[in-house]
Length: 155
Image (cartoon, rainbow, N blue to C red; front, side, top):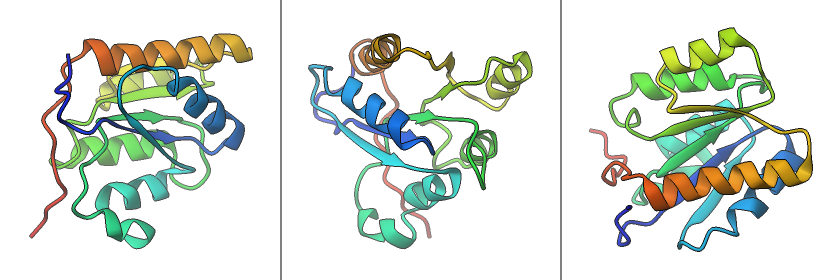
């Protein structure tokens, strides 16, 4: 179980606004206290984690407890963002669930090779997608012991 004193923040990264809304809605059904933040691409994800630009006011706030990451995004792809996150000692412990439309074996293998914690192919139906996202949330928020809270402090 997660530490109930730690703020649970889920960061949803997807360039499709409908998929973001759907996932955010599904996550509201989880009975644990949590917040869902959303960003549209890999570059914005990295700014969010580094507390740069529009996210500078978050510098003293905890990092996300979980990242739901799409692979197929313009600019910095999810795969590139995954590689950058897992290479950074400050961010590498954040669990990352790949939530994508890709079913390519190469994407699955590369995601795990780069440190993804799960790989889930998005469903094409609304009801199934809601069910999958709810299950992701329940597993990561109610079952798993998440890494200790880390604040982004760099010298």
